[in-house]
Image (cartoon, rainbow, N blue to C red; front, side, top):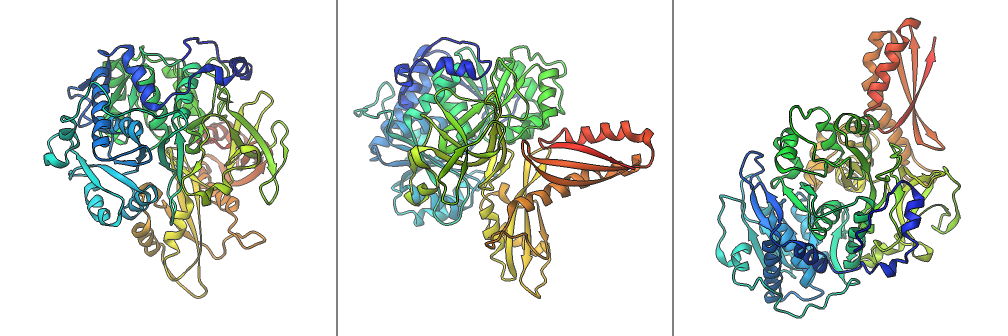
Length: 627
C-alpha cells in the first residue's frame, strides 16, 4: 500500500491517481492479510480500547494488536477444528463486542462470514441462516436486555445446516465451557494458523444481507479484494494513518461498520475505541461524546446523521478536542446543511457525507477532503470506481448518458462491485450491459463530476443510516383482511433523515382504525426501525397507468405533511404558510412555501424562521410571498 498522500481537491486529483493502472497498485489482498499486515506494524500498540458495559467512566479493557492477532489465529483454528472449510459459513449474531471483531476476521480467514442484524425477528434470522447454509453460529449468551438467545433457541431447529452454536457472554454473565467461544479459543494455538492458508483476493469473504425483504433474503457476495481496494482508497482520499484513534461504535452487521470502521482501521494499524455493546445507540455515550474524545485523544470524529443531529445540541464545553482531524466521513443518509456548517464552523470538522451501498462494498463517492464539499452532494467518485448517469428504457437497456446536471439512473463499476447476489434470481435486476451495477438510485453529475443523489428508484427508506425495504412494511399491513392497498415511503425527519410512514386504502365498505393496523404491523415486522411512525388511511392511493402505487406522489404527500406541521406556528407571526412539493430538474424535489403576509414588516422574521426550519433538512426550498 502506497504511503503517498497527495491533495484531493477534485476530480482531476482522482484522475491523477488513476494514471497508475489499478493492477500495478498491487493492493488487492485477503482480509486476513490486511489485518495481519496492520497488526505487525507495531504489535505492542493498542488495537482496541473497549468499554465493556458502555460506561464512559469505566476503565477500558486494552487489547494490543499482538493479542488481537493471537485471538484471530485461535478462532480460525477453532473454526477449522469445527469443520469449517473454504465455502462454509460462520454467522455472527452479536452486539458490539471484541469477540465480534475476532470472529469476523477469523471467519473470513477460514471460510465465509455472514454478519446478521441481531435486532431482526427470529424467523427473519432463520431465513438468512438457511439462505447462506450457515455451519457455525456465534451468538450472545442469555443476557438481560437482549433477546438474542431466545431467538437462537427458537430458530435452531429450523436451520438444518447448523452444526455448532457457540456463545459469547457480556461481563457478569457465565457460559458453559463446552459452548463458550472464549473458553474454546484457549485450547487453540495463537502463534499461527494450523491449516494451509490458501485464500485469494477473488475468493468470497463475506455474505452480507442487504436489508429486510420477505421470502428469500438478498445476500450480496463480497470479495476479499474489494475490502483491500477500499482500504487503499481510504488511505488516499481520507489519509488514514497508524497514529489515528477512531470510534468503533457502528453496528458490525452494517457494511459501513464492517468496511470502514473495522477492516480499514485494522489494516492501517490504527487504534479504535469500542464504546460498549450498543455503540452510539446508547444515550450515555452521546452525552459523554466530547469527554471520550478528550480522554482517548480521538482523531476521527464520527457519527451517523442521527448521532450528529444529537451532538449539535451538546457543545464540547471545556473538553479538549484539539486531537480531532479537520474532516471525517459519515454515512449515506442525508445530513442537513445547517448541521454540516455547524460542525465545520463551531467544532472545526468538515463532515464528508459519502454515497455507498452494500453491493459496492460500501463507498462509491465522497466529497474531497481538500476541496469544496458542496454541501448536499455526495462528492466525487473513488479512484478506479466509475459512475455514470443514464437514461434506461423499459427493459433496462441503456439508451444514453445524461448531460451534466440532468437526472437519471446512477450506475457504477469498479473493484468494489459484488460478483452478484448469492441467489441468482436477483442478479438480472442488478447488472446492466457491460457489467454496470444498477444502484436503484436517481441522481445527477454536475459540471465538475460531483454526484447529487436526488431520489431512489427502488424506494428504499433510510432511517438514521438503516436501509428499510418498504415492502416489509407493506406486506405486514396487507395481512389485515380489510386492507386493499398499502404504500410505505420515507417522511422527512430532522433527526433520522427519514421515518417510515404508510398510507393504506381499505377494501370497499370496510372500516378499520389505524391503531388496529399498527398492531398488525408490530406483529409482522422483523426490525424495530422498520415500524411505521404513522399509518394514514386514504380514500384512494395514487396509481400508475398500469395500476401500481405511484410512490413519488406519496413521498410528496409525506413531505408536505411534515413541512406544513413544522411551519404552521408561523401564522402567529403574521404569515400563513402553504406547502407544495414540486419536481425539479436539478434538485429532484423542491419545497415551495407560499406565505400570505398580513404586514410587510413581518417578512424578515418569517423568512428567518422558515430558513431555520428548512435548514434542518436536505430538501431545497423557495418562498413565494402573497399579499
